[in-house]
Amino acid sequence: MTRTIKFFDTTLRDGEQTPRVNLNIREKLEIAKQLEILGVDVIEAGFPNASPGDFNAVREIAKIVRGCTIAGLCRSVNADIERAWEALKEAESPRLHVFIATSPVHMQYKLKMTEDQVIERAIAAVKMAKGFCSDVEFSAEDASRTEPKFLYRVVKEVIAAGATVVNIPDTVGYAIPREFAELIEGIFANVPNIEKADISVHCHNDLGMATANSLAAIKAGANQVECTINGLGERAGNAALEEVVMALETRRNYYGVNHNIMTKEIVHSSRKVSSYSGVEISQTKAIVGANAFLHESGIHQHGVMCNSNTYEIMKPEDIGLYNVDAMVLGKLSGKHAFEEKIKELGYRLQENELAKAFEKFKELADKKKDILARDIQSIIEGKVTEVPNIIELDNYQIFSSNKTTSTATITLTKGEESMDEAAIGDGPIDAAFKAIERLVGLDISLESYALKAVTEGHDALGEVTVRIKYKDDIYMGKGVSTDVIEASILAYINALNRALTDVDSDFNECITLGK
Image: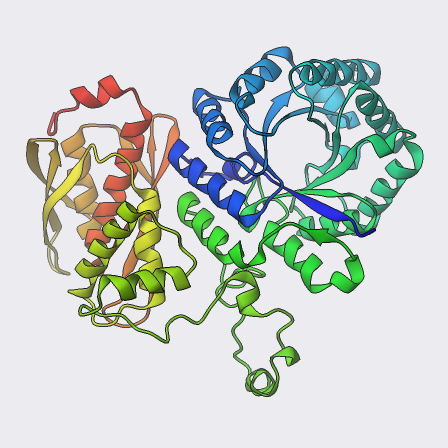
């Protein structure tokens, strides 16, 4: 009988641990909904005891998302397990995911525990979790650097305690494929009760082998793989879901396994996560990069024209990538044509979302003659960065030349209140940002700024991504406009609104522009 590989997506937990990524509850819920559509078997929604924000996000996802298991991560301590269950208890299919480190270096220097103490703690954690939830996953952190005999013992004991899934993580990306496969094979050969639990793997990409290690483990018998969209995660990231899925799909003759992933949702999922996280997808990224199906070499182009199989092992449409620029929209295009284009691009919008997107489309059509698919994607994905507009842009004026100091005058509104401020800076954007900072009166620092053209041509949309630091947190903002200065101002205000939304609401009420 053909095995079915389960996909455990940890974009919302490990993926959010990507440096400078900070998702709000609304964005996490939208990603979770898309993961459900994608067909993942398990969504790790977060680490409930890490922060109130994480707890609330896990709880909302557990309440709303159906059709897949919702997991919450917790250390092998009572407070974590109790808090995780409180967040997960309304899920249709909840899973408590407990972990403790098992490698010599972690036990000696981080935990300061003996092998017996670690096993005792692991058993107690699994038993406690089992008292709340029938589905319990246990992870042996840093398993790839754990002594195999000790790992076999840990796995045996946690299964006996009630674990339904045992995860073997390559936590620091240390393993190589053959070695990792042998570790998985050793577990199957040396753990007598192994048939009572699923074996999972969670591979990091520090040496660039996360996908290869995951696939080697599947071949060796693992039946769950933990990964993230676009490979997001700590340090160099995790195994990328889209890479593992398409390897299994493209090399089905070799791996001989099934899965539940809707591959035509891959591109849409990838773009949504990129837009929410602010982490751009490399052009040469496997499967979802902009160059993944482009051919520059004349020899390659000729081969593809003769037969696409000469240089393409996958079809673009298999992952939901279509050539939808055949129909170009303009300012005379109606709502029906716009809606059809959105459907072709794979988006599903509510009526109110469609109305907002169409309004933005019409505004853009007054500035840009031809609206291409990438313009529409930018319009739609721009809505994911929307947060409550505590502060809004009313007007801006810029004076700048190569002979004088740049000056910006910015007018912002907060409810019925309006105030303007001027500032000078090293260029028009710097001046605009300084004027905004004066208006809101908060200690903000710009951590990063990135500008890219959405499409080609003089009238291309400019998309700006900024990250600001407020107190100890980083907030991402995006702005899109045919005017890069306007896009920059909108991005800065968007990031500022994220920061203001994240603090106490009473504090927001007392903000007065210009003070």
